[in-house]
Image (cartoon, rainbow, N blue to C red):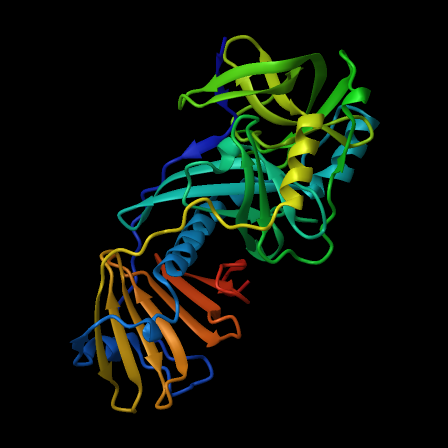
Length: 402
């Protein structure tokens, strides 16, 4: 029999309107005259042509990924000021566990988009597994969302370092056990992974410690006890998805936003991963460590893969034109934005500019060896974000000027 559970995610809608004057001159900071302004790109006389792969320097899917990551990042910035280093009053053990493990706990923000705006966001927790950037979280944290980013815990202060977020890639999921493995696209140096414990060491009534983001209260600590270990436990979420796994039944304080947070013993070893709670029963559950270990080992051994579904390119119209300075410009009009691909007289790429209906603008420069562009800026609502990318996917997202 399946019990209906509630997600331990924090959700919120965002309906901010994005504004940017289309007349802003978009010359490079170096004064490179090769880069035309948005105004000049729009004033060129274009001639329609048949589609050609040569001019698709950056694919539609890659542009959508960059745009959506920046929008998710913008939403993430709104919750960061809520973070304050917690004052721990549970004794020396709790303090030691939090200080040891909290740097390995991350903030995961997922988002969906509609009509050029963030329509839905979810906030969850994840646990870093190793220095290469693998992160463990729940299936229901990432399932059904178009884009996601990861914030690391700040060493000091009230916000993650330099307000930077990292792009993530989905590696593997186990829907039945409600587990997901993601990877930070370009992890920073110095990541420390959590240590996975052993199910044989879990005892009913033992003390446990939990770190997560309940109701957006970032990197919060709570404690409790293991009430029981349940084999082949069945549950169902509000969306109708059915799940089954060995779980730890717990008595502790967990809330939306705790999903994906590690359950720890007194030595800071992971015993489980927070998943759900039973409404009105004061019962909370975490996926047991032996299930986690099996999933992680299998997933890391498998070939690295991308998201389950790629964004399909919609129909588009393509036209070409030239600037007075001799640059060739390909204008590709998709239903949701217009892209200008600028090349020099020899056909070498100079930049890619995408303009959205709400006036937001994405600009890519610095072509790289992977066929993409190494640096992007995204301006919306008067704010500019910078995206670094050594490949074609967003890797590090930072507020301009930080």
